[in-house]
Figure 1 (cartoon, rainbow, N blue to C red):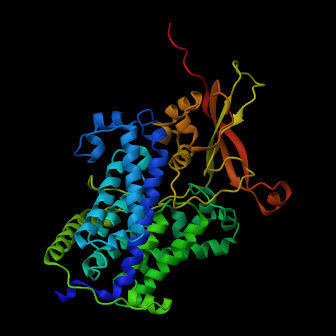
Figure 2 (figure 1 turned 180 degrees about the horizontal axis):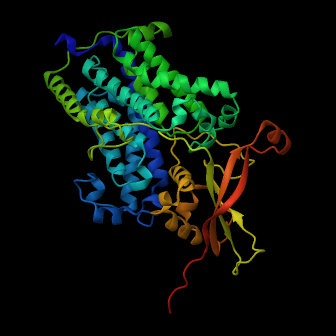
Figure 3 (figure 1 turned 120 degrees about the vertical axis):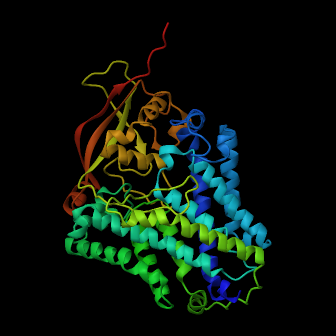
Length: 478
């Protein structure tokens, strides 16, 4: 079938596959380095307890069959090694069937992790990474030309990411419609980056321009992904630029980078090669019949499963970042349907004093990504995902978001749990754990230009109340 492949998109496929494999590497590394404190046998939300109550059909994966911390670590590090090999080109150096097997393994291995990750893995970019990885199984390798159906499915995925986010904004917070949301967003977003203070201090008319441009980029431009070249490439370029703007203005794990990578599925590879001065790729051999059959079957599956996200996007009660099946295929996406006007941060403190009183000296724990010390400039961590820091942002919005895990987190601080302390930037009790831990709620705002010059601080914070009163380990019963 001559229509089946489009050899001119060889460079587009190369960028998509290598970039996607690189992001799988980041995801597996984050899992390997953080799991013990979060979902390990002695973690805040242990996997063994989870799988005792959740059947395989609802959360399919290898950890339903067996779990130990050692096994999970081996699983995650093996996934990281496989992703690194694919990013380096291993999937193009083997036969087509082996290449597809490598991609299927990446998808299945990460699916097993996400399906036992519970609260820590409840982010839209987890499902986005899995859906993209599933499509990559059928994207082929250097042995064949890029299949046109899979390239269209990837455009469909980018469309749902962007258009879904645009719709949720227009249906949600009124500040998106009156173009004022960016008066607040850079300051109140989950994890600001090193440039967020400067973005927030841009003139308000420019913030209104930003907001209007965002609506165009998410509600108009994605439609052009399905138009002929060069318009599809231009639409992809606009999406890439807007996503890079988001990368510069904050930390959103791999959401923005993955959207950038997937957008290249709409870029004319030969045209991109000409711009970069690269030699055009030689025509690939005809794809085997079994491969054509698998691609057509996968396309039909996506078409059927698309009913649920399309219905959701058309609904007035649109939901964002939702999977409709346990395999995280053909999901619905969206972000920031509402924007916080104020930023509340939970500050965790401890003391080594046995008795608590007005003169007790409290020392603050430092987190890697979330705001804490007002004089500390936020760091750039994306595409790496700091899961605890993200959930601390949610805790500042409402204690309900902290319900399942905050108590176990405090308990591990009181015992000086090494795995938990490794998730933090600063432990003020290196010798022995504290006797008491408390949490207080602060209102944070970016300093003004004048305050920044006078104090050197990036943030100003005001105590608003108690989040958790001072607690100690319960004495053992005698």
